[in-house]
Length: 261
Image 1: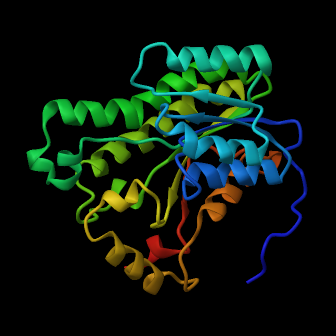
Image 2: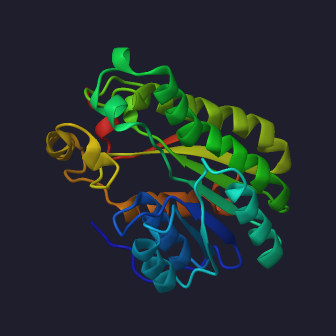
């Protein structure tokens, strides 16, 4: 299979905000790398001071024009980030929402045992934060733009041990469709991206995740797992004018695993 070498800088002049980089294995980092490879400027966020030392070298390697803290559960941080983007860039073309969270006991336990406050927390951080970001990003997408959110196949099919995140990701996908409808007249397109199993820090918290990886590799028509750059280049393509009339889709980047019975 051919590899991607020296891609054309088709996103030169674009400004991309990537939220959710935690380490070099993050899907968000793959997106940021792909955007840079095709010419876009990137802004990178980090969750807190504990996460900063892990994310800062990655931001520096990408030449990130903006590097700022963002914990969507803290009042004011999201607004401060977009105020900084408006001041330094004046616009934004691409937004990647690659964050999700739930209480450990709710991830480990079944849906029947999920607490009300735990469910609300997972929905707020994993879903409603996208809506809040989109509301702040839309006025800055003066030439239109593209918004991405990261989902998983467990949103539409039962994946054992995915538990509370299944309903949460289903809500995320529905939110993307409704945002695509509301923001379409402004030239803003919205997609949910559904990668196959990847060795990320978030996924490592799922029970029997290694078994899920092995099964996906065996079932994939292409015969191998995808990586974070596959996800990144898919988003890069969708952000180009070549995909100007695609919106509201859930795009699978999984080597074809989702088509298998």
